[in-house]
Image (cartoon, rainbow, N blue to C red; front, side, top):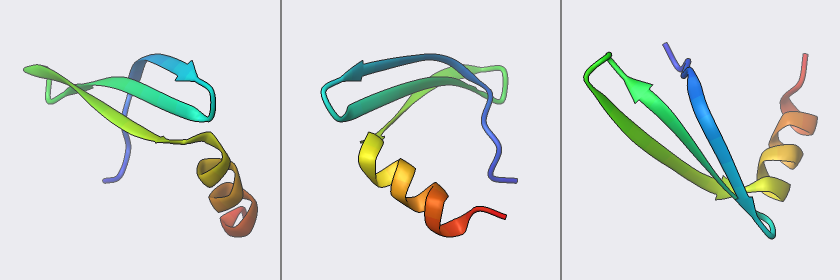
Length: 46
């Protein structure tokens, strides 16, 4: 669970769009802020 297999990532400024496959039947997109992602990883790393 909570695992994706990204196929592409596109950045524009601080925004990132990650394209990934869904159950071998479709493609989806996740959008987020690069700075938010970096801060989350720094606070929650093991």
